[in-house]
Structure formats: structure tokens, C-alpha cells
Length: 348
Ligand code: SF4
Ligand code: SF4
Image 1 (cartoon, helix red, strand yellow):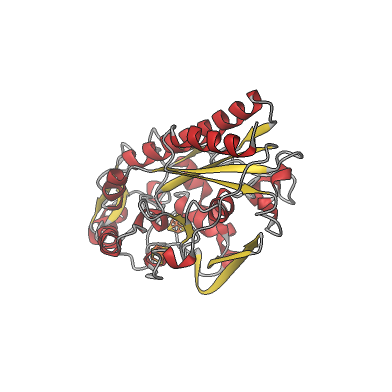
Image 2 (cartoon, rainbow, N blue to C red):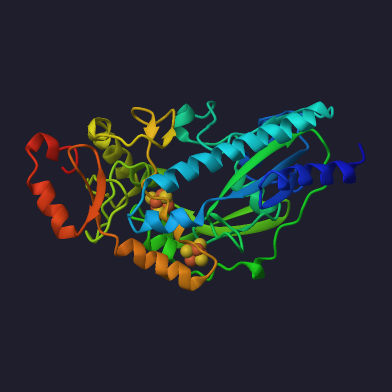
């Protein structure tokens, strides 16, 4: 089929399926990028990738940040991730049926197995973020998340890789990014994943992009993964009821995480979340995501969301497993009243 027609057809398919943006990256536009931009890793004959974004439910975000409702944002996250994986499958099968060998990528939680520690290195087959920024879906925010004018960082990305020779889309102009370096993403992160001083640059197809250097990913796994959640100020937390110490140095996070596993396994869990192959007990509850959820295009909304978070209190867990936010003082009393065995599920 004519290259232009096929490209338009695929874009229409994606946009007719609920995506809010679609882009095309090619081997040429990704040339010179990091290993996670190598399309041939997933399909040796690959020439192009179709990349898209689906929006998260903005209403659920504020209830999550205020600690009023953990479930809605968790369930929405699963729903949109599953839609992204499903749409990648649909694009791929459509192109396969048209005669172009293609493969879908999972939206999340799938990793390469051929790195030194296998899946535990958490290197994805391809980086949706890199593909998305290079193909003009959005900009990198300082956080390293992909941000869009209308939806902020509250999007889920998906991709399908194909041997079809599609017409690439260009990156957005850097001046059009709404990221003003407000650093609320960093302030809202109890793990310190984003370096406040250092930046990372990535060059793909002669275009260079930058964002805050990410320190050890074990930081985010420890906090966003729900192993612990109390901010160092002691005034607010994630949705995790645990308050194991958050180390300062990258190299201390893996040990802290391993130490927190027995308590993580023993605490009562909610009945929603992501079944993640690498998580102890396999059920991952989303307890944070703050860097993504705070980052609204309107600076005032961003500031309000940050206030919601830092005034949301500290999460505790009732004996029946219910998670609820209380004042920092009340949380301390609650923990102090637990017997030693129960207390060890939440603090050292
Ligand atoms: S929270 Fe502020 S600094 Fe962080 S990515 Fe968003 S706009 Fe940029
Ligand atoms: S998800 Fe939470 S812990 Fe992870 S980087 Fe974002 S704010 Fe930090």
C-alpha cells in the first residue's frame, strides 16, 4: 500500500480507538539512541513504531492525592494500561493482516531477560517514553515523564513495532513545553528518584532531549511499590501504611527494600492493583505516582495538587486491612498502640 495512505490509516485507527495522540518513530529517527530505542530488538525486520497516548481519569487523581479514594485511580490505571496494551495488539494485528509483520508491546511491567540480572534489571524491550518524545507525542518534563499540553503527565503510553515503512512524525518544539521547572514533581517524591542537580540527555536521530537524572530505580520501587511511604518530614505519606526509613544513598535502597519484603508480604492487601511478576506476592498496589499525578499543565492546579498531597495526612491500616489517612500525631498513636508483632509490619 502507498506509504502515505498506510501511515494515515494507522493513525486514524489509533485516534478512533480513544488515543489522544499518535506518532511514528522510525529506525532513522531513533538512530544513535540508547538500547531501549532499538526497534530490531523486538522485530528484526522493524522499520517503524506506532506510538500513542491514552489519558488517565483526572477526577480520580485529586481524590487519590487527597487520600479520599485509593481505589479509583488504581482501577483507572489498570484499565488504561490494559487499553494501551490492547490497542498495541490491535494496531499490530491490523498491520499483520495487511501483510506487514508487526508486534505489539505491553504498556508496562515486561522486561528484557538477557541483561545481567534478567528481568530484575527492569530494562523494557523498548522505551515508550523515548519513542513518544522523539515522535512528537509530548515533551519530557523535568521529572522525565512525558507531558502533554492538555493532559499533563497523566497519560499511559503504548507502542507497536512494524516492518511497514511509515512516515515519521517530528518532535515538538522545546519552546512549547509547559514545564517551567517548578520542581513540584521532586517535592512530591518521597524517594528522591529525580536528581535535583544533574540532568540526563538522550540523542535520537540528531535530536537531543534532557530531563533530571534518575537516581537508582530502587528508590521508586521501594516507595511507589508500597514497601514504605512516610515522607521524611513525617507530615504526609503515600498510600502505603508502612514507615520504614527511606535511605539517602542509592546503594542503600536495595537492602532497605529486601528488608521490607516480609512486612510487605504479611500486610493485608486491597483487592485491586497490578499483578506484577517481580513483586513479592505478585500484587502491586499503586501507592504513589505523585510525580505523574501532580504535573498538570496549569501551574495553579499543580500547586493546588501539591497542597492536597502535603495536607492529606498519613496513611494507617486498620486490623481489617482498611487504609485511611489521619493526622501525623494520630498515626503515631495508632502505631504505638499496636502489639510488637503487628507493629513490625509498619515500622522498624
Ligand atoms: S512538576 Fe513542574 S518541574 Fe516537574 S515536570 Fe511538571 S512542570 Fe516540570
Ligand atoms: S512514582 Fe512516586 S516514588 Fe516513584 S518517582 Fe514518582 S513520586 Fe517518586
